[in-house]
Image (cartoon, rainbow, N blue to C red):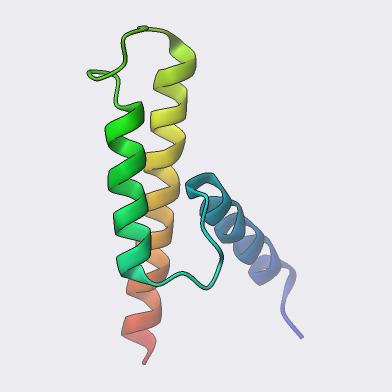
Length: 79
């Protein structure tokens, strides 16, 4: 049985995959590809409308991507 801390971490990671529009079992290549696509779309320098909603979306996408990358790194180190 998973500890409460692990359940919270799993839920956070699951939410990160949702932010990127991916399934939890997506591989690293899929994650990177989707991040690049979303980053190009939501990057503040590309947006015609300079508003905080677009900037927040880009920040959320980037934070989700970084969290997922860390999980892949930890998984690789543990093998």
